[in-house]
Image: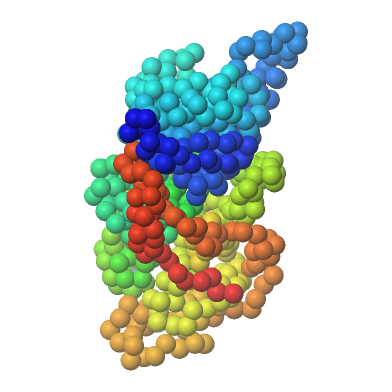
Length: 514
Ligand SMILES: [Zn+2]
């Protein structure tokens, strides 16, 4: 027996997930924590396929009813490219669990990965649906940018940053096609290296409490900017932050004229270095003439004219641009929630997360967090329901965010939020000697414009919380993390490295206040 075969057999591992069963070898990348990602992708794509089939059927019926019966069996309804397929598990699950008559190309640059995929595809009896490709993903997508060769769906699930694949991906997907993009380089996106973030994504990240939502918005603006170069634009249907990665699902449309709307969907972010208050500055503005509904594009005036924060007197950092338009389509998410199969292993989490997503206020980007508001004023942390009630009592909207369990998303201006916190401090005073000369002292110098009521309201407790859904991932599993780059490590060494890295990234341990 050859040496390499011995190694392969030693590291051989059988994996069952969904309806698929595959064998991986130590050097081929498989991450069990991503089962939620794959379950969710299947649920999302099934809704998308249903939409495509409905459109096709209505066109065919209108055009020539006889065509419906004579529909060719050979021509697939849907073409899917998994550009960085690694173990091929995702493609096999797509073949077995997606609706409709589909053709899937599972591509990987590693010859070993492709060989392993081929045996798994045969083992799962899906060779008639999944075709393997051994190619550079970028070159492959460039070969598919002409009309007629484009894919309905492209799935990009790279290790780390997806940005180098975006230019070819936005061209190789059909008009009204679906693009699924994962990013796992969360440290860069969450503000640990704003310079690197700009180099990779064309946007400066900030170390702010709402960094996970900001990461989603940085990725969306990056995809939009690539699409715009080819007269195309995106419509996000679902954008999720989960575990150690973010994942966005966007539809891509053609229309050079519509690209002029992009600047009004982007904003720079001013973030106060003292109290954490954020202000969004849109890059563009659209004015619609009510009489003839004509649209005019313009430059907005700058809203942050003062160099210092008017709540605490500290200076701002500036980040962005970020996508400041809605990051989900609630109509689409509702369909996913209604149709997701409860047989999926992570169904409960899909149900919980999507319920929170549906409750999120869609036109108020970013959020405050309970512990940052209380920490800034050195006061006892208020119960979440008290703060949410106070915001509602003041006449504004409030919601949770799926990206952070202590997040407070609201359309209330920051002045109202700080007034509410001043009223809370009046009831639960901070120790004066602790706040001397601090940001807290500066904020508390101003009296609240009105006394806010903390009377608890029933509607402060959203349905997803009342029902006790699994809204946030509570306990990370063993080997939690983005894994290791494919082919870099094998077998036990890979696991040892994962163990060693447990808890390496500082996680927010604060508990949601009950
Ligand atoms: Zn401030």
